[in-house]
Length: 318
Image (cartoon, rainbow, N blue to C red):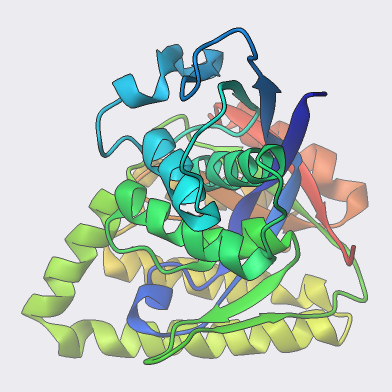
């Protein structure tokens, strides 16, 4: 049997992080230049039930049953076996690779999960619908992030710009048109950011004083709606001031950092239309809105200003 390969993109939150956990909308986009890849290969000489996981990027080489019961990769495979009703597991190996930096708000864990789910299901003779893949990936997100919003699994699975809002019964998930492409420069602070920790700390603050934070979430929601309208009208570069406003609100929530604030200032000084942190904050990444012509100079300025690494990605309608 030939090897089965599946890949999934990284993701970046354009607007709405943190507020999305409190039922406000958010917009996220895939990052096509960063990908996670899973390759499943049959191992006919190995005993039935043996599943080997090789993930050199994180120095992991193990049978899946030897992993801790709550290890995301073990739980991911178990969820696929359960969903497909597999009683007797054929021996196979899964090799995982990724160009997505870990703990930087780019959806590395989600992309790996989605790639593994799809590759394993295909190897076992089934193609799972996108909504089912997203559902399974969301459960794994709980291991990574504690109280996930659901936006990471949604944008990675559908591989398209997504408008997302949690609801009481069911989330609103809408892909939307991007008639005029735009560029983002993603700058990594070099500081690993634990999303679960940032989300948890903000939740404690909100629980202690909701009247201080609810208006911030409402203002973010208004920004998200304005940004979607600008994208759909083909005026994405007009989102610059909204990005700066969103960043100011994230600062007020206490999820930014001096390094992120500095890189936002550097990007704007270098000609970006706007910039903000993206993801959990406290480190990780910031994003700068540019066009094709000045993306390179903004990236160079960010590297000179202390960014550990930069990535350029174009947001367009696939």
